[in-house]
Length: 364
Image (cartoon, rainbow, N blue to C red; front, top):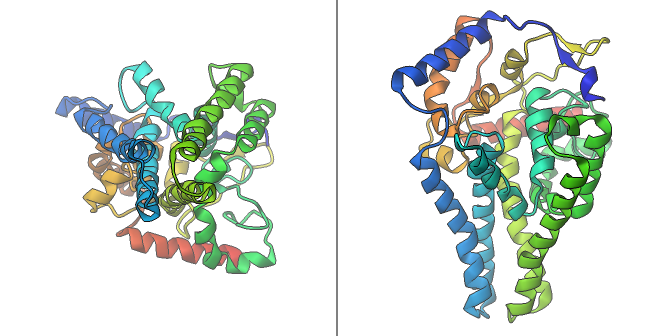
């Protein structure tokens, strides 16, 4: 489906949107605080990068031969890798990390450091997912190999889907491993060029492709070639450790993002024949997005405030350190206008409900 063919209905003066924006603006003005990150973001960034890079340098410089120690260091890197993606790269690519644009750009390129591609991620996440949340054919986050996973009631159902609530958790761990494969990113970039999504960016296709290839070469050089050369362990163990690191990171990221939208509470609207979705784009976010674990401070800190997915989808340009405070404003305003505000009390409850939705999508 072409990006130009799907639009939200012309409700630009939706009273809820106007009221909510005014209240959020008032909150920042009255408290005299910036909508961007502050010292808390810089401390968190240092921590997450240390969690990822310090074990790496211990690996390549330490001369270790104990396989269990090496596996442990790779495991810590997997946790740090997910932490960078959730708490640093995510805000930076939304332009919310800092009020200084070049800092957002530099921090956004941490996606390339982790084996992904910043440009593809911005188009997939910022443009397609945030605009067309849960819209089949537009939101790439609910697209998966159709024979394997069904994340939308509008997707074709296969017999294997009857058991996806059991096996999906295993495949979730392969997310970042798939991200780092060059073929996948090259094909995705080409698809965005053909569909016109690439025109939403300030770069040309050739520049994006060049950065993509150079980024992949750098990633595999420092993450595969260097360890193979310096670690005194069998080569296949090094490869397995790399896959294990990716699996840990991919699993963490998947179980954070999936319960935000693939839930029984969430809607899956389809465009009308003329390509219009009968709603305001921001109101659409309330119907398709769910929060979870709003009282868990440590959990919220690590996942970059993405347990407040509603606030993030309404205000992606605002740093996640403000989401907890904004959630009260958003919830009260949504209830005032009789709009939904979906939230699960704990992360465990959200995972259980996500599992129920996978089962429902697989059998109905």
